[in-house]
Each structure stands twice: as C-alpha cells, then as structure tokens.
Image (cartoon, rainbow over all chains, first blue to last red; front, side):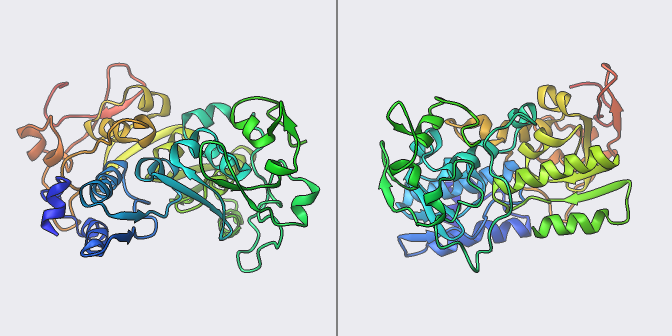
Length: 209
Length: 165
C-alpha cells in the first residue's frame, strides 16, 4: 500500500484518521484485482483540497496500474475528472451513457441536461429566477418506480408517449446511448431531436410550456 | 422529500435562525437546487437567517451572502461572498478556491500538501500553519485573531503579531 501511496505523493500526508480510512479503502480494494469500486460518494463532505488528493490517487490507480474504476458520485465535477465514460442513472435505471466529453458537452437526455444546469456555483447565483426548463416536483419512490419513462413525472419536455411506454436505448452521435422518446418520436428542430438542439444552444429555452 | 420535511419541522416554531449542516450532501444536483431554492424562499418570506455549513464552494457561491471559513475548528476568515470569490486573502481560502474543480476543468487538480490535523493533534497557534507556505514563527506561537483589513468591509485573518505578508 505504501508504494501506491508514494505514486500519488500522498504518503507524507497521512495522519488524519478519518482520511486514513477514506484513502486506504480504494487502495486496499485494488490489490491483486483489475477492477475496483470506489467507496460510495468517496469525496463527499471533504474540503476540496482533500477531494482533489483523493481524485488524484484514483487517477494514479487508473493510469499507473491500469485498474478499471467504477466511480459512483453525485459530484459531476469530480466525475468529469475521474471518468472516461459516464452512465447517468435515474431511479435505478441508466438513462444515458457515453464518453465523458460528449455527455458533458452535449447531454442527450433531459435529466442529464437538468443535472448539468443545476451544478451550483456563481453562475447559477446570477441566473436565479430566470432558469428555464429545470425539473420540478418530487422524485418518485425508488421502491415503486414508474413503469414508463422514469423521468416523465419531472421532465420539462414530457410527451404523451413518455407516460405509457419505456423508451429504448438509441445510439447518440459522438458515442453512447440515450433512452428518451424525444430522440425517436419527439419534436425536432432543424431535423435534430429536441434535446440535442437544446444542448447545442439552439431553440427556445422554455420549450416545455 | 425527507429534507423538506426536516426543514418544515425546523421552521415550525418560527425560529429567527436556521442552522443547515450539509443540507444537500449526496443529493442529486436537481434536488439540491430545489432545497437551496426553498431555503432562499424561507429566508425571504419569514425573515429567517440561514447558517449554512457545507464543504461545497459551489453551494456557497450560489446562496451565501457572507462567508466564514473554518479550518480545524478555527475561524480563519470572514467576509462577504463577492470579496471572498474575487480576492480572498487567507492562504487556506485561496488554496480552496484554487482547488475548486470547476476552476480546473481541463487542468490538473491542485491541493494543499499535507492533511488536516486530527482532533487530538491540533498544532499550537494558527492550526493551518503546518501546511501554510507563508507560516513564520509568530504563527506557531500566538493565537490568531481576526483583523479588519484596510478596505474596511472585509474582516480578514490577522497574522499573529505581524503585518501583511
């Protein structure tokens, strides 16, 4: 373990007990295996400096050791740093997958789009009150999720069809898949599905109505 | 939903101050945004002061008017949010802002060497001094006191017994 810690220059930074637990867990999990699952929400409730130390350790594991890493997080900025591919889940279902760069630059699913628009920061402070098309309402119960599109109860772009039929995963330009009726049956702008047009900054911001 | 119920319970006795300790950690950001909007609405409707405790600088930037930065249980800086984001003067605050992930979307991650002390190994003087690149002898001996800066509106950390860096 000390060798792995040396790789990331963290061996001198070890005294805090709670940190020991957090850092030691991914390292120990990785011994002798090719895949590790980072402990749930590995970097939540840590100061950003410490978060970055841990993210760096994970990246070292990926690059120096060729370990595949399954990183589960609500922290989109951390995901962007750690992941090569992203799967966005809603109520236990994968709604979109794809290369990290494509998902962040051109989200194809309304939920992914809402997530990226909701990342807190100074920009959102300035936009307070003029935000459009953000999801409203409560998360349905994960114990009894909707049998149709799981996001339809909160989707600003919902179609009638979304309430009766689960969308199938369809390929997305530039990689990945998305499960959304708007991609196959929905309104289009200039021939492109509405979510793609919105992601590209085309079309009305309040398409929901 | 649970968070909203908790907030409702907390507000039932019409307090003047709501202490929200990491109210949105491990929530999806769309729900987080709803909770933050709710706190804002409560503040405006009931004249409620909200003390938000968080590690998320994005949340701080979005909702807070004033910021108090703590390190290892010590207050090291207090100022309004715009001053904090534009020109924080404490070495720990500056390192935090530099390490904020959205500041380095395509760049390398940065961090402060070392780790925070455990509760039973707190250093003397300023608790950040073992990791501070500007630390000097005075930082290791005296207690730190907050000192009002020359521009008046932003109380800032004093270097114990010292002038500006």
